[in-house]
Structure formats: structure tokens, C-alpha cells
Length: 190
Image (cartoon, rainbow, N blue to C red; front, side, top):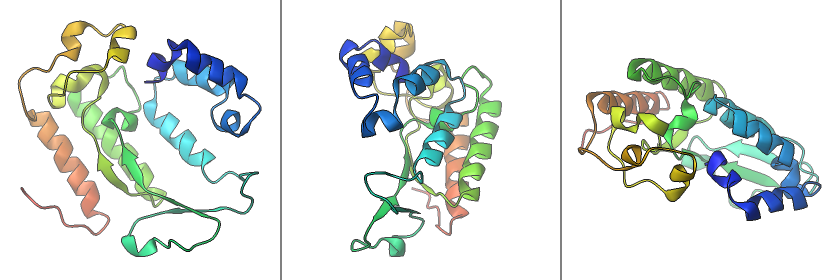
């Protein structure tokens, strides 16, 4: 997605224009250039998580609460940002996007989920598709977005093939359900 956005001139102009504003403090042009080179997708997630609690000059003293239970939500809490963690594309939990071995990828995702747990962050939802070029190893996906073509993904990598979860995909779901159980939830077979 980061690479796909770089082809959009309007987006790049926005980065330049808002460098010294609130928007530019979080996503500066320099940070965006670093993101373009990044092969460790999970390090981007960790970086974003580190930015969240930073002092917000527009809301001094803001408190961050990563929700791990519904009971923590307090609509009336002043100066509080309640955060729910959702993963759009399980590749965000990967440390090496060049890795091709599904077993190594599963191990890596499990390790990074543990890192989130150690920060008391619960992933409430994860989208299995968008695993980069490794989609076929885990599951089928809907026809991919045009932005992927801009990044020179081969057309055959973008077309859905077969259907459902592969054996590695089932292991990935089991891994996610196992992580869910660690937070006191019961996984249900459906």
C-alpha cells in the first residue's frame, strides 16, 4: 500500500504541503521515504504503536487505552483515546516480506503476536488476505486492487485461484485462535 501510494502525485504533494502540520508530524515526507524501503512490515506496526502515546500538542495529557475488554470502554472518559487493534492484511505481522517458506512465516507471525501481547495489546480482527505474494500459500483472495499492478505484481499473482484455506492457512487460523485464547476468549469451531 505504501508503494502504491507513491505513484499518486496528489498524495505525494499532500506529504510535501503538510510537512510542518499535525498530519506531517505523524507521517512526514522523510518517514514516508523510510517506509518505502522497509522490508520488515512488523517494525512499521511497532513504530506506529510507539507514536500513539507520544505527547499530542493538540491534546496535551491525552491518555491512550488499548482495549482488551469491553468493560474498559468509557465513552465519557475525558482526554482519552481508546484503541482497538485490527490487522488489515496479516503481512503486517511479518518481519521479513522476502521470506517464502510458509512454516517460517507462521512462526514469525506467532512471534510478533506475542510481542503485541507483551505490550497488553489484543488483536481483535485479522484479515488473512494481502499476505503479499504469498497469498496462495494460505488462502484464496478476491481480485486484487489496481495499486498492486503499479507495484509490478504479476497479473497472475492478482487473480484468485482455487478456493478456501490451504493447510497452511488452516494453521494460520489456528494460530490466531490460539492467540485469542490467551486473552481469555474461547475459540469456537464453526
